Amino acid sequence: MRNNKGYRKLIAWQKSNLLTHLIYDETTNFPKDEIFGLISQMRRAALSVCANIAEGYSRSSLKDRKHFYQMAVASLTELEFFIDFAYERKFINSQDYERILDIHTETARILSGLLKST
Image (cartoon, rainbow, N blue to C red):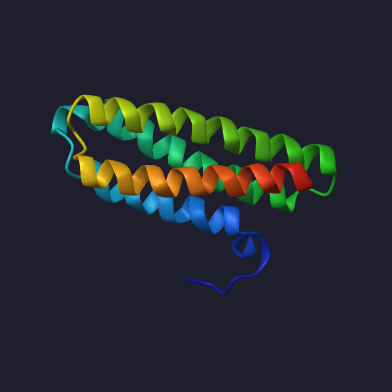
């Protein structure tokens, strides 16, 4: 992976990237009939968090930057619902659920700080 320059230096992006990898790893164990449903939705939401942070970082105006960081928060909230739903359907075990939620919560806290500081 490239060095920590640009958006990669943002802790919010680093945490969301970790969360995305966790989601990808976890969803490989989901039922195959969820490939075009929950698996796809969870992965897209997780990727959207990272992508919006990266795109926001590249914007020159604070208004634009804030807009993309807000979209990242929205995608993170969407992902939270999918994580809960997958757990309720027993696609995620308790231990993995807690680990994913811990990273999700930390990502949300850091992203919120980034948004406030923008």
